[in-house]
Image 1 (cartoon, one colour):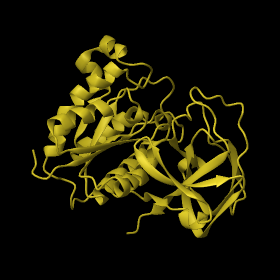
Image 2 (cartoon, helix red, strand yellow; image 1 turned 30 degrees about the vertical axis):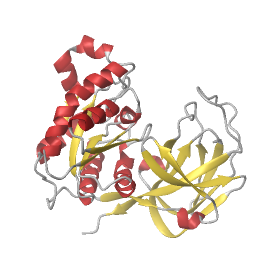
Image 3 (cartoon, one colour; image 1 turned 90 degrees about the horizontal axis):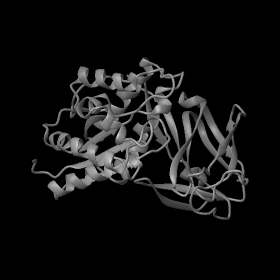
Length: 339
């Protein structure tokens, strides 16, 4: 083990966030065998890989700095989306890897089993395998490789649906993942100063706090990540950027006092519907209102309407809160790479 104790970030989607998944038992095993180790998980449930670069930066600022990042970043919604292609998938992977390097950390990839129920437009697991092979990056295959190791019938017993493990499945996955991560944490650094593939666009974060200074701010723990939001009640809010920005989307929070809003974009005048409560809003989680399906939109400002009730949405747990309100975070951007 190294003399300097590492600091690990596990970042991904619902498989990282869920309590029955691999991340909690993996972190417990790592800390048990490595008392000085610090490890964090950030689970961005229901989002897509385009949000990973800005949230790696956000996590590094609020929880880091990190020495190592484990990326479990496949997304059913991305793989099964008709706009997803091999080209934009590689572009995204290049941006993610470069972001980890920017943060001064090392990167490893993990493939998590998914049983596809609809047509997939890009085999993201296969793309990650090729990407890691080409760049000699550490990767662990707990998708098809997990089936090969344990057999299809055992794997079926460890899955509670097409994507998520049972508690026993999460423990079994952690047993396989932990020694891989110990080896990863002990490896000689390889990304520092290395020339990496350059994406055409970088995915960034534009804070909206200066434009929403008149509204109170609250910090919320969203599945591992403490985030600041503007709390907007009983009125509309306007964000003026003062310049044209290529924007991917607006960050908000799902929560029990949410409802329905309309977000009018400038200068296009297009109005997008936004619902900030869902049946699982008893758990606060991050949402992103995507502009043009995350391909970006030239934005100069936006106006968020006052929140209206969404009484047709029934919570699985907990009760609604009052007064109705919306929590607004930063804008996710797309920025051209400067040569």
